[in-house]
Length: 124
Image (cartoon, rainbow, N blue to C red):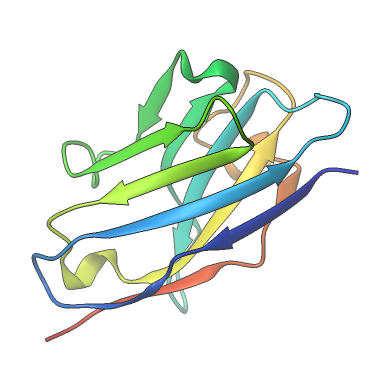
């Protein structure tokens, strides 16, 4: 059974950085992509970034491109989201998700397995 668990959220000031981690337990190697989404109360879950198995391809949401970097540790099941130059609009609950196919990389429907989320707060 695939399991997804995020960590690394917290409170930072505008302009600071934060790195989130996602541990994907994939015992039968069915996961093709791992992504990050974020959500604030009353809004839809927004695509942030994803990375394919092996790290060969990455994709970013328009609002984070150039500031966030997604990467993976090839020796483990960890996926990281490095977030730089954070601003208050980046605040929210960040969810890590894993999907089995290459389709719908930026859509919620493309991911079957989800973590519980980690809170990111950006405030002075």
